Length: 192
Image: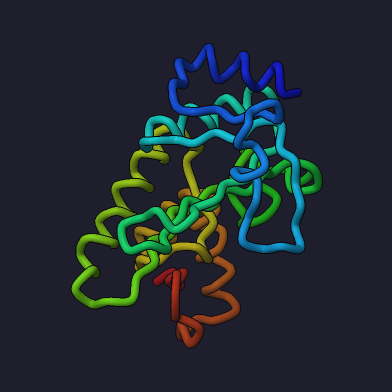
């Protein structure tokens, strides 16, 4: 697996540091804050830019390598991260149109999560999250997981589900909640 991953990284033009088990600093880089987990990854990629992250994620998908992303506290405010989960398996066993969940054919599910404590960092950190999300979305399937959206409104829900699923959910909402009592978060508006 590691040779295929390294080949894919090379084909993608990936130029940031790649640490493998024979590297002198491998043990230092593979350690994570949670001492319960002791993993020995085939490769540790140390991206220097959003483009490096994109290339690494695509190389992992192309080589069918398991992928874990660690933020390490090197973000704007020190705690933001890009969180990546590998999909497939049971998620992909159900047809995409069978449920409201969108993106069952995706290899990965990602979140750009800006985290900060000081109000003075609001604009900068929110902008980082939106810019990072927009950059990664150019390499993503349409749609998203509605419960992970920080912004609210009909457009966010419509983008998450897509027009066909949204209409199906709106018909269901009209039948079960015509007065829109359950309207928080990513609301599905009942049909008029």
